[in-house]
Length: 126
Image (cartoon, rainbow, N blue to C red; front, side, top):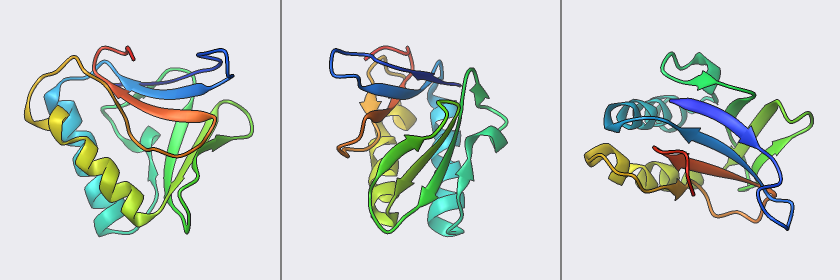
């Protein structure tokens, strides 16, 4: 599973942090990491600590927040995803399809008005 950042993906100046190049088993591992670290242990999840995720040009830390703010950065290298507990529960639900069968589809992992989206895509496309 690869993690990267792509800026200016459209005419509106939107950006995307993308998890891609994975199979069903890696999707299951990612969902388990989210479930165990954020939901059960109520701690932040630094994706660089996941041995199955390789960061290409960035790192992402998932944190529990009072509000759903989405992904932010100050340097285009270190990113922070701030969502509520409920936001992460919804994210886990969105991962279900990728964990039950191989697919070429994609999913944005939150619906927040933010300049940077969080894309989950086995093939890397959207």
